[in-house]
Length: 40
Image 1 (tube, rainbow, N blue to C red):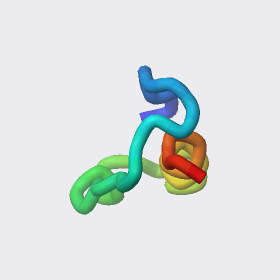
Image 2 (image 1 turned 90 degrees about the horizontal axis):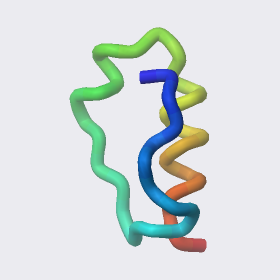
Image 3 (image 1 turned 180 degrees about the horizontal axis):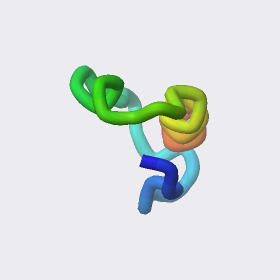
């Protein structure tokens, strides 16, 4: 889970990822990508 999500910036109202946290060593990347795709 180190690749960029295949979505445009500000595409979603909510990001729900309860299990992905268990399968990655780099949580900061996940949070950065979630922030990027969330609508501001």
